[in-house]
Length: 311
Ligand code: ADP
Image 1 (tube, rainbow, N blue to C red):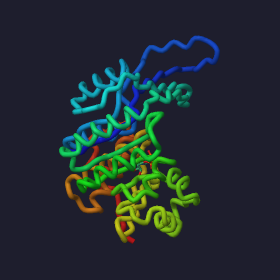
Image 2: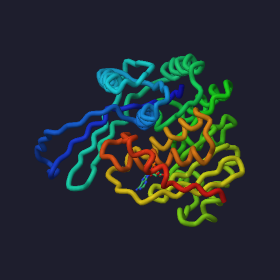
Image 3: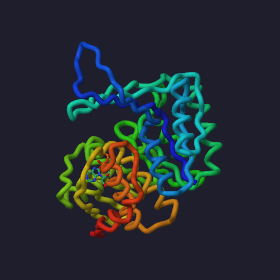
Image 4: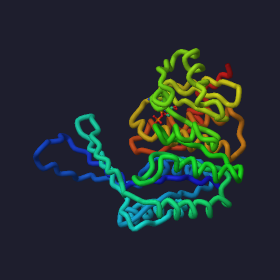
């Protein structure tokens, strides 16, 4: 089973409007509410791939109950730590081809929640063969919290796939408790290594992926949007090119890319298959309007068109 961790899930609300009028009333008829958070997109991607998955993290209040109901509807197994604090809403106003977002920071938690969640997580480890950790931490959690989760998983040799950014990612890179795999996009990696990356220049990509901060990470995938990806697995480098597709909504593509990587590791697939699977999932998400959704009926068609070159 794959265990997915989403520490700050949300109810994602989208309000489509023909015109967004400031300082006046905007009426919406087609409200869409989904269980959101990067880790829940990963969870759905794994579920669509037909592999057993368990979602965990922290939820609370009526928003938390709504998240559980949505996961029930999708037949997704979950085991969250439930707090007294209300989970957050994230609102996207879709107007005139633009997307204006209002994102709540979420509940402020404390050291009690940290220790109870660590215990909760420890109890789930015996069921997990692979773990994914995605997104940001709740307010009040220490910035090295993911390092603590990785340390516990590493004790049982459970590979951890980490998709985070900024200080939370940096903490794990400088710690002795490394994730097995990271999947930064170009901007996230640039921010960490303080270096510009040219996605069309292999020399630039090799230089970035060999940055000393990334030395002890077994598997690194730099996802490059429409330019595919560049990866290093131990001492081998892989350039991955993808076909041109009709992009509808690329939000969440990185998350379902991670779900493809997790599924491949769970299924002991080769690096080439893993990269092809991950890219195909990312593309399938970008072709849909719903974040974190993929139409698996198109999987084979696009999988055939992904090219992995070992360099
Ligand atoms: P993130 O969503 O984390 O920013 P990317 O934008 O790099 O990550 O997208 C992850 C993967 O999704 C890409 O490697 C690619 O396979 C697919 N993808 C994303 N955007 C596009 C796009 N515009 N065209 C084709 N594929 C895309």
